Image (cartoon, rainbow, N blue to C red; front, side, top):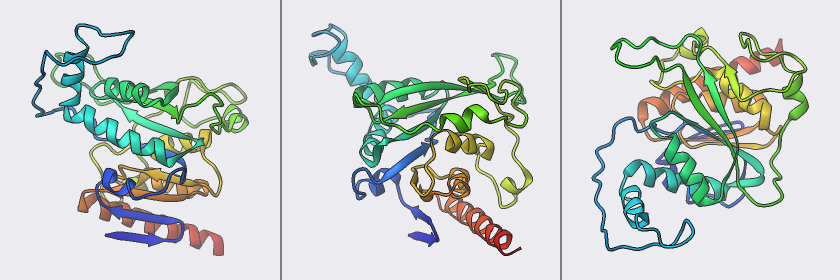
Length: 275
């Protein structure tokens, strides 16, 4: 099932299956907010007789480690979707990946195995993070965002350096105008009323996060891929920046939520043009 409008294609399908049918080097940017895998029912088994080369030679534990990883659903899924994204994003493009401690290690390892180079690791500091009610651990007040490119010696990825340096972001106490942007971002997690007016997604990000990603590495009139659409925030940010956007969503309710939000954004944008 597809829904299309001007510069937008929203696809109700598993992202890995859908991406396999797309041509190489067809996107200028990808923003991925995958399932974090906070809980997993994967069965961990390994064959101690198996031997693999790597890490400077045959290491006694290599086979055990690989078998453990390869039979973990989160690791395997991460590897497969990242492999497709690497194929689809141009050498001049960028890949942004949201993560937490539940999946950031797997994402990092998969990037290295696939030859994807990590440009920066960003710590998104949530000043207004929800408190920890159990009083048994520290209050989680940040997430990790990896800025990645497809690899290779030339490092051709786009970086809108001047735009980012000149920017002063509302409510970010760490970024000053005409100063380089650092890898710690002070972005409150609250969403604007319009972002929640049609419903919400449990891991929905405020649009100001996606707006910043587009400012850093977006390409006007380029193409943005969002493998895990959720509520559609990244797609709207891409449209706002002037990109053609393609998103995958596997859940009907979030497919419909994203569609409603995009339709409203496009209608509002058109009204503004005619005022």
